[in-house]
Length: 95
Image 1 (cartoon, rainbow, N blue to C red):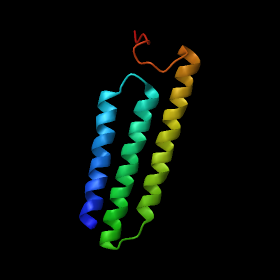
Image 2 (cartoon, helix red, strand yellow):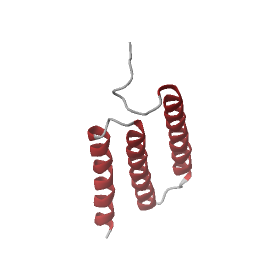
Image 3 (tube, rainbow, N blue to C red):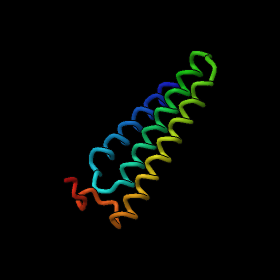
Image 4 (cartoon, helix red, strand yellow):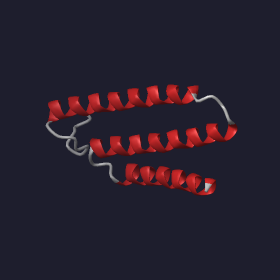
């Protein structure tokens, strides 16, 4: 049972990485794949800390930073859409 959970968490992280690498045209898809990877890391930390019978305080710190990362990504997405009108990476001139 415990080994199946570790396998599910590992597969979640791999799928998040595959989406992050393959779907890099839209910023929204990249942000969603990053949040999916953060969720799999959260599950990993939760399982690891439960296995060692440690305090779950570090999970709250991790959640605070992951929410901060998500809010920062969404603010960048909104500013890009207001400035350029879309979230395609190919339509931006970086020069």
